[in-house]
Image (cartoon, rainbow, N blue to C red; front, side, top):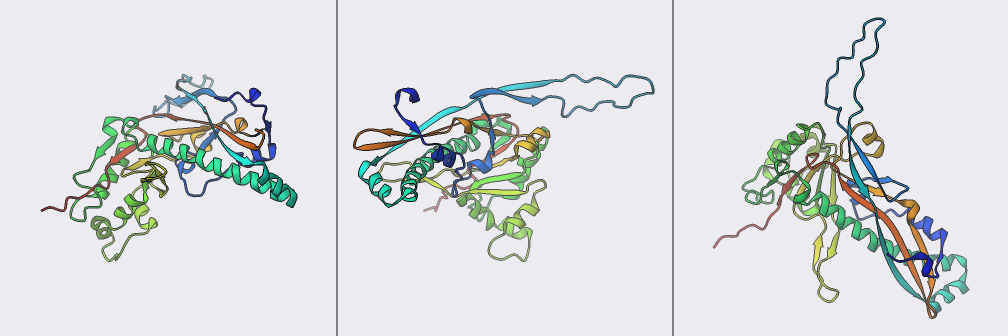
Length: 317
C-alpha cells in the first residue's frame, strides 16, 4: 500500500468528496450488496442466535419478566485498500487553468472518474465472484442444471428450480427476496416455455412484474449487463461479470439488517478513508485515488446458487 506521507502529495478535498459520492450507472454490486458505512478497517459482524427460538413471555402478577440469554455469534470483517492513479500532462492542466477554474476542475474530475470506474470494475468482479461463486454456498444450497439449462427450449424447469431455491433458504429462517443474474440468463428465463405457459395466453416474453408474481417473497430482479476484458488490450475477450448462474439471495438495507433481516454477503465501505491525491512529478501530475472496502459472506445457507442456468447447447450431428 502506498505511504501517503512519503508521496509528497496533496489531497484535493473537493475531489475526495466527489469520489465519496460516486454512483456507477452500469454496475450492480452496490445493489446486490448495499454498502454498510464503517469508520474503521475491521470489526465484528454480530449474528443473532435467538431469532428462531420461541419463548414463554407470559408474566404472572408480582413476578419478574423471564430473562433470555443475549446469545450471538460474530464474524470478523475487514476492509482492504484499493489504489489507482493516472497521469495528467502539465500542459493539459495549464491549458485548462487558463480557461478558468471550472475547466481545471473538469479535467481533474474526468481523471478521477476514469480511475473510479476502474476501481469500481474491481469491486464489481469481486462481488460477482462472491455471489456467483460455488465455494460461498453450502453444498445443499446449490444445484447444477447444466443438463437442463433455461436456454434449452425443449427442457428444463426454471419455475421448479427457483421455487426449490426459495424453499431451501426459507428452511433456515432467511428470505431470499431477489434473483440476481446476467442479461443472458434473464433473456433465457423470460422466454422459457414453462414460464410462458404459466400465463397461458402470454406471447413473446414475460415482464419483470409477471416473473415476480410467480415467486413468493421475491420482490426484485437484479440484472448485471456489464462486461470486462478477460483478454489483453490487443486481443479483447469481453466477458460478463455475472456469468451463467442465477443467485437467489436476500438483499436488505442496513436498517433492515438491524431489524433482523438476513444476508448472504455484505459489503463494508470505509468512506472516511477515501482519498483523492495530486502528486507533482515535474512534467506531469499524478492523480491518485484510494478507496477502501471489504466483503463478508455471513452465512452460506442464506442464499441458493442455480449453476449453469444457461449452457452451450449441443447441436447434434
